[in-house]
Length: 442
Image (cartoon, rainbow, N blue to C red; front, side, top):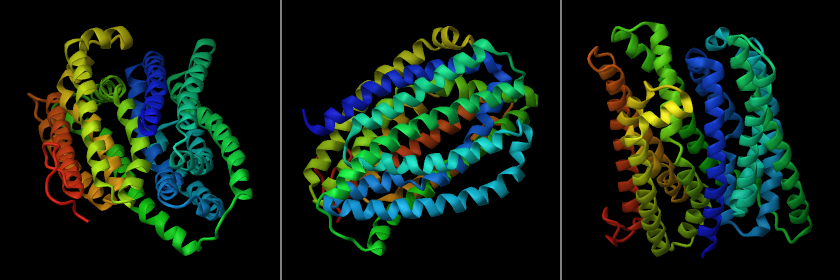
C-alpha cells in the first residue's frame, strides 16, 4: 500500500471516531440548548469562524504545499520567516480585533464574555496553523489525526461535565458551548506546538540552505492569499446564510421564532447527519494537497490522473451507501439521536447537496495542488450567488418554504461540483469520463 493510501486510511479511521464524537457533541448541545438555543449557537458560529479564519491566513495549506514542493534544506529558512511574521501579524490582529469585535452587532445578542473568547482564539489558531502545515507537508498524518481526535474528545468531555453538574440559563448555556470549543483548541495548541518544536530543533541542527524572505513569501502568499480569499468568501456566505434562510422563511409567512427553530433543525441536525461521512472527504483533502502539489511540480500527469480516478470511484462508493441510509432511515436517525422527527424531511430533501459535497472537498484539494486557486474562488462565487438567489426566492414561497431552500442548496452544489470537475479534467488531460483525453493544459 502506498504512503498516500496509508496516510489517508489513518486519517479516515481516526476521523471516523472523531465524527462519532462530533455526533455526540451535537446530540448533547441539541438536548441542552434546545431548538432555540441551538439556532442561536448556529447563527453566530459562522461569524466567529470568519474572524478566526483571519488568524490562520491559510498557513496550513501554503506551508504544506511549500514543504511538499521544495527541497528539505530550505524548510528551516521558511519556518524562521513564518514564525517571525506570525508573531507580528498576531499581535496586530489581536489589537485590531479587540477594538472592532465589541462593536459587531451580532455579538450584542449574546453573553458579553463571548467576544473575549473569540479574541483568545486568535493567537491560538495562528500558531497552531504553522504546526499543522508543517506536519501536513511532511505527511506525518499521525500527528494531524491525533490533534483532530483530541479536539473532539476534550470538547465532548467538557460539555458532558459542565452540563451534567451545573444548570445554566439559555444565554449562559450558549456561552458554555463556545467555551468548550476554545478549551479544546487550547489543548490541541499545546500538543501540536510541543511536537512542532521537537522537530524544529532537529531541522535547525541539520543541513540547511538560506532562502530569501521575498522568495519564501512569494511562494507562500501565492497560495495563502487566494485560499484565504476563498475561505473568507465561504465564511461570509455562511455567516449570511442563517439570516438569508430565516428571512426567506419569515417572508413565506411563518413567525421569526419558528424560522429560527427550523434553521436550528437544518444546521444542527440535518447538516450534522448529512455531513457525517465527509470525514472521508476531508481525509482525502489533507493527503491530496501535498501529494498533488508534488506530482504537479514534477509534471507527473499520469499519477494525477490515477489519483483523480481512484478518489472519484471511492467517493462514489461510500457516498452512495451513505446517502441511501440517510434517505431511507432519516426519521429513525433524527428521532434516535436528536429526538426530532421534523428534521427527517430536511435530510431527505438535501441528499443531492450532501452527496455532491463529498466530491467537492477532494476536488478542491486538486485545484489547490494544481495552482488553480483563482478558478476555485470564481467557482464558489458563481455557485453561491446562484444558490442564494434560488434559496431566497423559492424559500419565500408559501407552498415551498424549507423545500424551496433545499432546492436552492442542491442547485448550488450541482454547479460547484461540475465547475470543479471540468476544470480539473482539462488541466490534467482527462476526459469527463475519467479516461485519458487531450494533452494536459500546462
